[in-house]
Every structure is written in C-alpha cells, then in structure tokens.
Image 1 (cartoon, rainbow, N blue to C red):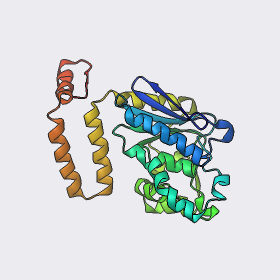
Image 2 (cartoon, one colour):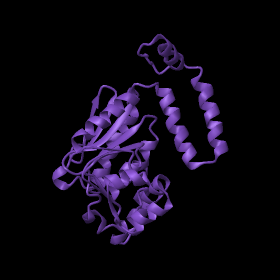
Image 3 (cartoon, rainbow, N blue to C red):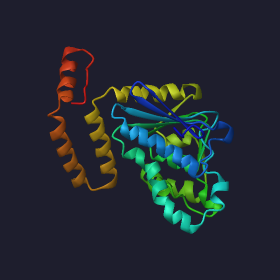
Image 4 (cartoon, rainbow, N blue to C red):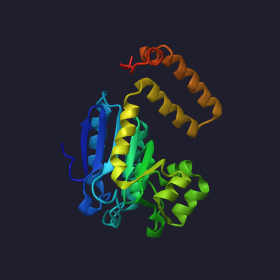
Length: 261
C-alpha cells in the first residue's frame, strides 16, 4: 500500500470511503504523487466486486484548495500532452464504475477539486461550502473535465460565468444552479452522504448499474439511442432473480434480499 499521504481508503460493509487526508496542506491536488495514490485506490475499487457505493470526502475544514501551483509552474506542453489523457481518466473513471459515487464537500472546493467532484454521480455540500474554478486567471482553462462536465451539469451560461468569470459561489448558489444536489448543515455532511450510500447499496446491483449507464447515455447521446438502451436493460433486468425478489418483498411487506442474480 503506497497511498496514505494524500488519500485514505476504508471499506465499511459494502461501501468504500475515499478520503482526502492532507488537511494541513488544504488537501491540495499536489501533482503526480497525488494522482498515483488516487489511481491505486481506484484499482482496489475496480477489483472489489462486493462494493455497492463509494463516498469521497475530506478531512479538515476544507475539501480542497485545488491544484498546487508549484506543480503547475514547471509543467511543459510536452509533459501535459503525454500525461493529461491519463489524468483526465482518473476524474472520469468514477463514471465507469457500475456503482454510485457520492462526493461530500465542506469548506472551499476550488479548481481541480471541483473537477474531481464533477466526475461523481451526486454531490452533497455542507452549508459552508464554497466553489470556484479559477484556472483562467492563471493562464489556462480547466483541463480535467471542467469545461465539459460543468457545462453538462449547469448549462452553458452558468459554466461560462464560473469559468470565464472566475466567480466563487456558496453552497446555496451551487444548489440553485445545479452544481450540487443537496445542501446540509456541516455537522450532518458525512452522515448524510453515508445514509444515501447505504440506501443505494441496498438496492439491486444490476438495476443500479443500468440506471447509472442509462442516465449517462441520455446525457450524451440521442433520444433514440437512449430509448434503445432502455429496451435492452429492461429485457435483461426482467429476467433477474433480484427483480422478482423486489416485487415479492413489496407484496409480502418485508425487506428484500438481493443477491446480484
């Protein structure tokens, strides 16, 4: 195990918890060692077929102050060309997992950290959270999915306001424009994220997998393609034991027992 300087990872029952663990350093995105730790944890998650949900949270008062500018200062165009596709996949890989990924954000969440949570499925913010994507003021545009995922999430106008205007917004504004889905008091943040993860983890895995894939597809393709996917996934799901168990448990007024079959 080589992670632990920038990230911790633990598993509670069938939920994986990824934690930014460098609060003294404002949980900065501190270059290649940071990304290597994240990759190692993602590999563990990919191999663990018993996981049913992921929570990404942070220690300390702040989620992350974004990228360490000391990492960017010596970066060359050649280095970026060679490494950026891999770095982009790290943040986008949360969408490849067949389970829900929930970000729990408190305090400041700037730049690359905002891009990190944009790759998650659901974002829960503490009422003291603040968001900013200020890359333009440092001479570049967001390159870890910021211009792409933020535009999908909040629309072209708000994306331009936040990225081109380098605006900083609070949790209430983030909720209003759709950057986050839920805002809670700070002391309830992690419990709310875990409660949602536990609820989702208790649902039929195949249904959860296809729901996530179907929503992602609908966000990126035509109505015809999305409806075709719905046909395919429904054909599969209606032949599973879990689907029958869910219906029987409803009529029998008992808690269902799902076995991913």
